[in-house]
Amino acid sequence: MVVDDDEVDRLTVVAFLENYHFIEITGTSDSADAALMAAQNNPPDVLFLDIDMPGMNGLQLREQLPHIPACIFITSYPEYALEGFELEALDFLVKPFSSERFTKTITRLKEYLSIKEKAALLNHTLGAGTIFIKDGTQQIKLQLNEVIYLEALNNYTSIITPNRKYTVLTTLGGLIKEKPFYNFIRIHRSYAVQKHFIKKVSFGEVQVENIVLPVGRSYKEALNSIKM
Image (cartoon, rainbow, N blue to C red; front, side, top):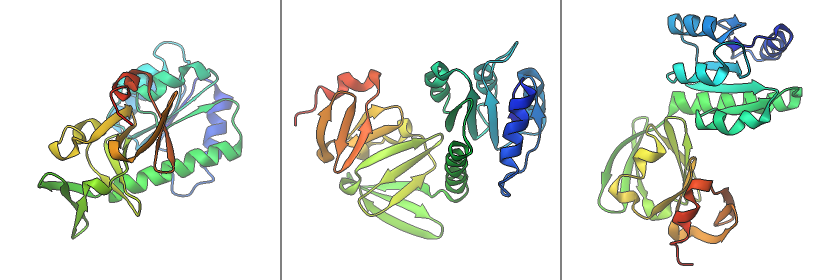
């Protein structure tokens, strides 16, 4: 569903989307109020959503539709980015955007939808440092001391090891509350890292192995307790 009060911008997004055959446009709207009613009756998988609109704005609309899996905000005002990502935006496009930038957004969307469709489900934990992950009909035994970091993706969490990435159907916040994940520390709303993989902590960044991850402002104090 594409929602934008500016007709030219709305038609531009629609024109871009028509290049991707896996996407079906279920509706367009020039106001958040009309989109809310339409989405409640026929919920889409993805919202392409302008923010600055008369009446209810795009951020408020997203708050009303948290059950829609993916939301991509499109706006002329980059200062809305923080609020957008706090509402679990999959991406944030600033007008005017190029076709190349839009392609990156669609690539990210396609990866997310694939993860959502094929996500492995966290089955159960075994012992202090081992979990079993259900992957289709298989049960994969994973040693937690091999996990470098965790990455949040809406209601899913990616578990990254040196050799592979697994995805489980649980939030990052819920996962790290599980007892086997006691050695992980939250550094960002989207990331938690395993302490023994931390190589360097600097202003706004943490290096785990050869990967650099951002540190959220509200998580900086927790990092101060780590002894390098």
